[in-house]
Length: 137
Image 1 (spheres, one colour):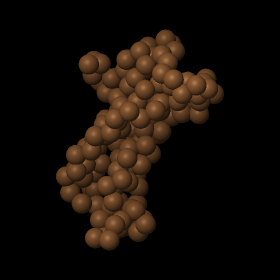
Image 2 (cartoon, one colour):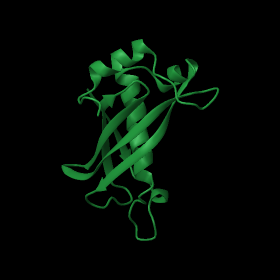
Image 3 (cartoon, rainbow, N blue to C red):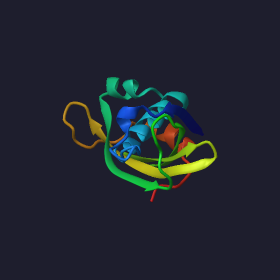
Image 4 (tube, rainbow, N blue to C red):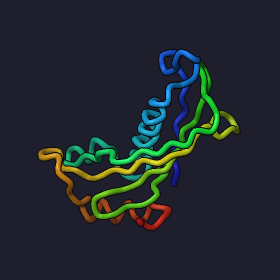
């Protein structure tokens, strides 16, 4: 179960060398993650209505080739694993056939009210586990 989003790189995402600034890759991951949730689980806003956020606890990006202004890229996301109160999403970013970057983000479920860690509700967790491609470490 994968989801992809296309993005045309605007000038403001580039640095003085004309290359997409590294911080934007985290934003690209988020674009694809939100689409993945909508297409395969439930919109992120539904989690918020249920009193739950997913705080980012880890980001990994492996850069392969540079992306520049006006490049068309495609960001693809899929659920890697789910634990009781955390999950991992993996990503690839491509420009045409070229792999631009790959990465992963890990997220802890936290209460909207307190900001403290809490378990993902069992029904949601079981549903997510059926979509995961790896076993949680």
